[in-house]
Length: 571
Ligand code: TEU
Image (cartoon, rainbow, N blue to C red):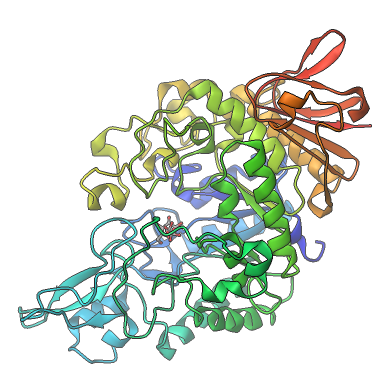
């Protein structure tokens, strides 16, 4: 296996409960993943990242871990994990696992011990217990709010039955935050890292990597009136050269002290052979702040959420691509690219939402708009074709290779996301992007498992999107992904250099040029049309069509690139 594989890797995210179910209980499992590895090898990805499968009461889909060094019985056993890992490696697929260090489950033995122990005890010192305010401590210690809605504090009942201290949870009340100033917590996570590194994992996706360290004294926080978007008055260069320090941040995100933890982890990883990696899930703003997690002595990668949040508009795309390349180049790392994950509205739906029909983040305010299915899929395919041509490392979320849309109409009683419960249904939450995958159009649960059980109901229309209905079918979304990934590898696009092309100078009609994203990466010329009218492709652009996200047209002897379509050409 080549060194620094992560610089160019296509990494496929598996959300284990929804990927493949081997035992028919309606919940995906590790044996299911093993059984579908051949399909992933055929897709052409380099690595998989597994969302949590460790022991958990599943209040937040496993991002609430009760035992970091064991497998939840829902997903199998450690032996199943070892078998899956070995089979993946045999096929040349690396395996990254999720690590959730900001908080544990409230079922974790440490938290249970903390509840049973008195105020000020060593047991409580591993979490963030504080006295309340108000006359009898009946008010929370500060005004922080949970990412999932509601307050970020819950009051406990002391062992003697009286109302007592409060504990901090930036997410659900079942996810108490650790106190990372406590050396015992640090030591425990070193042990956890070693446990999985010794088993042979290739790295970790670090959950809420921006959250572990909180500002001293846990001060109140009022987000800025503009909704917290911290624009770069200093410009990209200014931000990269230090102006970031001036930008305010919430007292629980992006605190300086967090980096020391990852430097410690990096030196631990460096003791291991085989290029193991750390990837930061640091949902911070603005983009250059993300790069603070990426250092030769810290993490290898950080998710590029600025790219995910960019609408399907040529000028916005050019800007975010430029900023991303410059930002990560400034720290000697490749950019990452990502369009979907288990927390956001699937991009086959999201990209059809407009200003009048607004975008919905799964955790954020409820989207009022409804996506337009056909438009969404066309844009999703074009957006993916653009993304997979960019230099750097790309993340793919399970099901996007089938063109799966967000499932909008889940029955209320099927929903499981804590966001839904914590906001009394004000926010839909993220279940709509987590519906179990369709593998076979004619099988029960569309081949998700051997029975018709599925922990979230699958829409009837998904029969036609099933993998077997797309496999080998020219023009299908699955075949588009396979071709793009194969060509990406063949032309070493991940390791390439992006050179912008001026659409107008190439002869694209002036009125359409603004809607066109055009660049060259090595021998491949990439043109994306984000506008609503077809664009004539100039002769000079290269004769051979390597890839097209949708059918091309022609008029008066010229090739036409239809609206919402991306094409790869070679001379
Ligand atoms: O998500 C983290 C997360 O929700 C934040 O990055 C958030 O979007 C941001 O801070 C808002 O400012 C991760 C997991 O991906 C998610 O599934 C979990 O629910 C969550 O952590 C808690 O573990």
